[in-house]
Image (cartoon, rainbow over all chains, first blue to last red; front, side, top):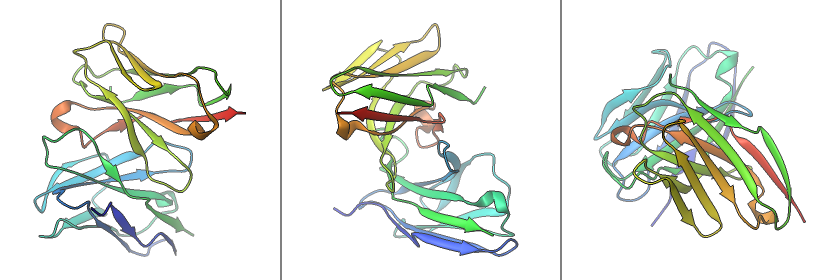
Length: 114
Length: 113
């Protein structure tokens, strides 16, 4: 059983650019959630995907968008990057919407915006 | 109403001591309260969780105490070990939306030998 894997692990972008982050969910999990963790803070919920559709969104602007693919892997896209977008982006998978309550997190993608 | 307030921000405990971290919430719709543990360079991992039908849950050295009327819950780590040194996050959500957790700001725990 493979865990949640994210890529890339680190990346540097400049303000105004666009970025795509990728996540492979744990085997058998069909629900993916994305979180933003600023330095020294707790993770903040961005959005969730269930069976390829967005199923809930936190307080993030539309320039944060996502996709989920038939194999349940997922992408997070951020357009028009701002300095405040610098953070660790975490992907978490879970088994269905009514599962055990446990989220399985990846190690994250650390984005630096200059 | 969506906030989860966590304290203290940092905590130093001697090996063998008790570590206590507290959280408070406002939203009465929350009925799922997990604690996550995060080591440097790693993603958070579920440590222990509670639902409001019980006031306490114990798993090994880790105990959650829950006070529904005060809208507070806490994590107790008994016999703290240097390997417990990590950042701990409390979180809350409605059980129906447990994937959409509201996290506290975290407590950095250091257990000294």
